[in-house]
Length: 207
Image (cartoon, rainbow, N blue to C red; front, top):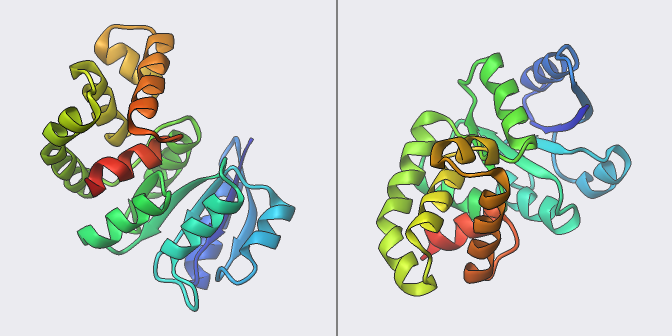
């Protein structure tokens, strides 16, 4: 059972998302918040696995909310769910610790798929967002190789992480085992001096 929290100030949308999740097999909405004022105490009680969070929240922005969630619940995955498509918001959210970025025009099926992908180790993004992130990442690859001594395969796998591929999909793509994928990712983290995929992506994009 995937335990999901929603942070969304639009009451109608928040209730619709809650109903969608509770009607989906294998999912349960354990918290539904209109703002981030009591997010730490609420999540201490509800213990979500995944948070679906808006950016344009009252009082405290969703980007600051990602930082708060990751600082207090490092194992919780955050999916930004927003109308914002501009580069600054995308990269700020990723650098803050978000592992997925979905636009609000996404269909119910896309929302469910994104949550599952995030829970099982992927980095789901709306197609238009993924294109922007990949384009920025591709410009950064030469610097990454020079600065961090990543191998060609390690760069390919880092690219695949940004593209949202699961370990299983990467193994199929490169014709190697999931165990080998994990080894490559461990080496990437060591060379970049990071501890998670969101930190690795943020470091590359920032560079």
